[in-house]
Image (cartoon, rainbow, N blue to C red; front, side, top):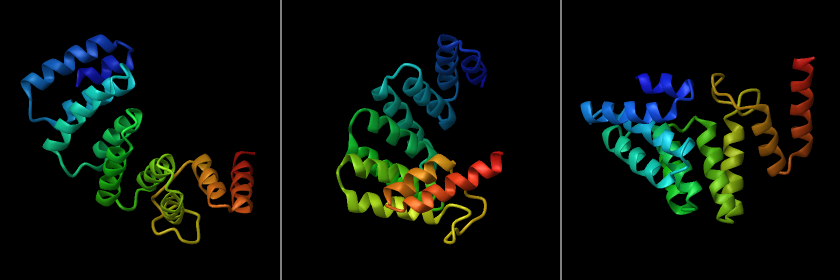
Length: 172
């Protein structure tokens, strides 16, 4: 898609125009709706249009966990926490080993002030992270900052410090 090239060149209006033409020519191509939804989210901050296009994409590709998470982000920006939670839940069910979806669910639950559930999701996401004694897959990864935040939230401050020290040794 040329729209991706236009976006990387910061030619946002051209990208929107190209995507509109692409969708007219290929209305059943989920990728066009997904990119258009993401562009409305990231570049125009039009979260309602982002939800609209991401919903169209989900209708065409209902097993794409990433699109559910993106729509969840748009709902989160609209302060529609129940809808965001539902989409993050769908994403985590479609891709249960992806730590990011569990972290996103935990974030929404924190905003909904459901601390116990939030803690459970963040704890579970930590179990999926490599280097952890509970890690299930060596291919999964999270940023060190994410891991430190999760450890601190879970009250494991010594583990958070240890993670920071290990990562700083790797940099030095």
